[in-house]
Length: 146
Ligand SMILES: [Zn+2]
Image 1: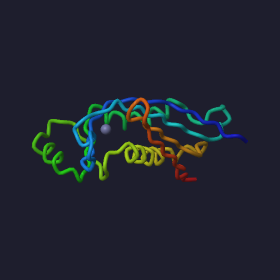
Image 2: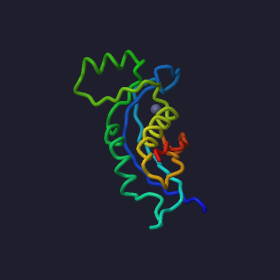
Image 3: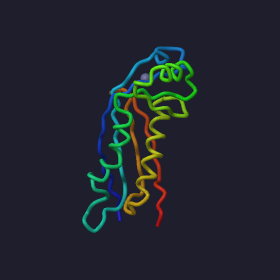
Image 4: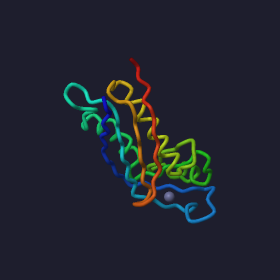
């Protein structure tokens, strides 16, 4: 039977910087991130690969965690010091440089774990737009439990 893909988009605003970068990206700045979460699989007896409501319920906590926050590389000592001195600001510390590639893979791997209980789902594809024209994409096979 042929697989079918469904997708839902999510948006949020987030600050970051790339301390290793020699150009503009080392400055503090932000993006209007847009993310397309695509689920591919064989539709169930009701004709659904996955209920869009369930998909939203899995993705929205991540969006809420990141929205209007600063995603900070744990190796960025300048920003780590700033957030220690100013604990009133929203920060999400991650153990990697905050490139769109790394953020996309991090989100995709987290979501794949959440999808393990959906037996119809065969593939997860996350496309994360950092600008309206530039994106990274990560494909993960969810670890099915049964
Ligand atoms: Zn950037």
